[in-house]
Length: 78
Image (cartoon, rainbow, N blue to C red; front, side, top):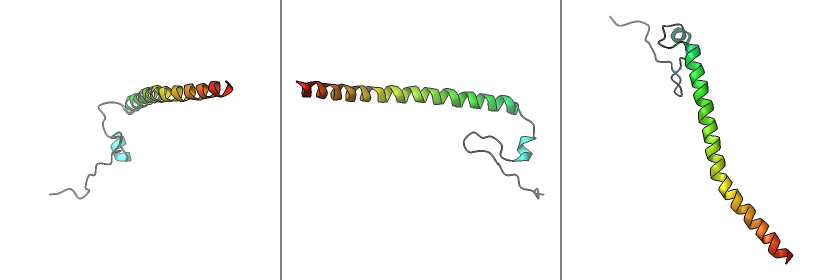
């Protein structure tokens, strides 16, 4: 006979972590502390890589603008 208490997957759609107390206390293949630690390390590494990529992408454009402004100021003085 069907179970009277339906099981619903209460997991975060970003990290698949449990969102209910029942799921948190069930058996784990990886302990929550280790899982969360790797999740935080991955987020930090990804954020740092993204920041460097963004900076390098924008720095080229900023350098070109700075050069143009300096050239305009030099030509205005002469």
